[in-house]
Image (cartoon, rainbow, N blue to C red; front, side):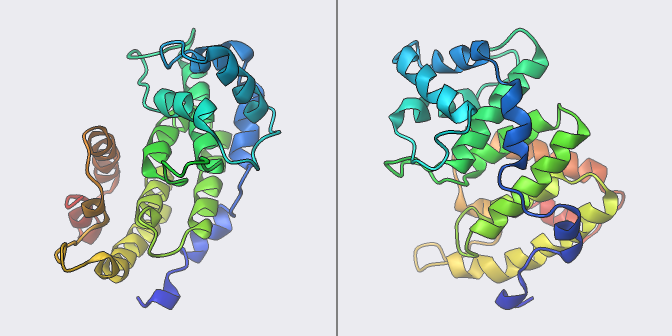
Length: 244
């Protein structure tokens, strides 16, 4: 596969056309003021009132075109890392997942004014997938369209490009889609990763070599394990996933 052949598989794009706001517009009508208060308060209550004002603007769709300042960027990032039963929770599991999906969508749609985070970073995508998987099929299909849109917004050499492709793979449910996207990811990894190699890091092989941390690898490994169990036979895709 050459660099000019790195468009996503046609079958995937045909099934899930790129859609910037479809998922967000499904989520935000279900985000209550009580949910926003929990999110606004999760930085130890710091600037809670100011955060709540900004979160309402995001929920109502009126501030998506403006870069995000510390308020409410910090509380969105903090709630993004929440886990069900461990952290700021809401009255039902569904409300927790709606609230976390809302936070992740905001972070993925709106850059921060100080450029302290990458807009399409996998740290926001993985918890988004976890929460959307707990909702209905309409949300899951809209997620795939959102991820296809994210891929269309990135350059091949963006650090998050292959991570985003993996996220799309992890969000697909039909076996033929999983295999089509998985085979594409293997080929794309082989083309793109050599471009990230430098004199200081000459041996980068797979896209996970680009990221380090504690929370991120644990969360990503959950998706790798789930994918492997969903693929029927041993083969190149399973071998590739085990390298991640």
